[in-house]
Amino acid sequence: MAFPKIIATIAGGFIFPFLIRLVWGKLVENFGPIGGWLAAGFIVGTTWTLNHGVGLIYQSGGAWIDMAWAAGTGLFVASALSGDDVGKGLSMVLNAIIGGILGGFILYCLYV
Amino acid sequence: MKKIGSILGYAIAGIFVMSVWGAFVETYGIGGGWFSGFIIISVMWFLNHYIGLIANEGAAVDMALGIGITGTMRDVFLKGTQAGIESLPTLACVIIGGIIGGSMAVAIEKMWAEKNKA
Image 1 (cartoon, rainbow over the protein chains, first blue to last red):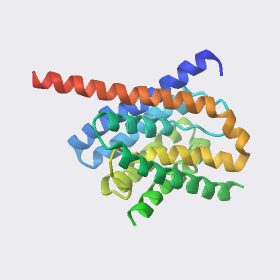
Image 2: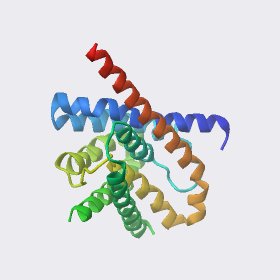
Image 3: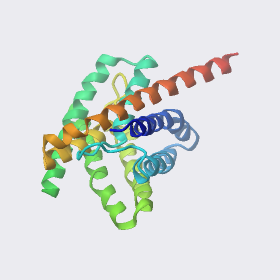
Image 4: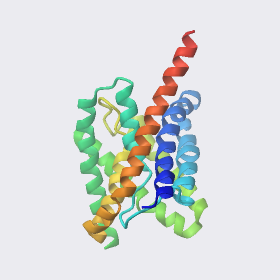
């Protein structure tokens, strides 16, 4: 993986949890649950366009690395830094791993 | 049940994103990708984090983690572990960027909180 691709990929990872953490909650505060629909389009949809649509995140291998990885890890660290319980959070990480493997296996059954 | 609900929440979000999203992109190009964010993430967020299918305990584990793992594991199941190993550099960069981004957002929140106090 060449150096410019490393910079681009780190930048792509940076932007996604940064926007979610600062903007999503404010949209929901202002607009209620509809704020979540706005956030889905204008945070996730628009950031997808940057990271995967035009490809700021470079794929070094054949297994898809989605910008969701950046949101999952970045938001967890942000939550921990603002004082939330890391131990309890880690047991939820285990649920996410089980759910992710289950989802991946079901999609394997779809595409195989 | 709380654990099963959470696992289901992560898996369902991952399944939608890692199948329907790509189909919209193939059919409608980049606009299909933007639209996928709007129609999939909205209702998945509402289900998982607003109504609360995914339990909210301790430090937040967003449905995004389940989505990310689903996409990568889908291809590891389909293409083998070698594909996964070759993707590790990207994974490392994305996670490093994500951690810096999340930390920076918290630092900015704290700066705003200080400013509002003053």
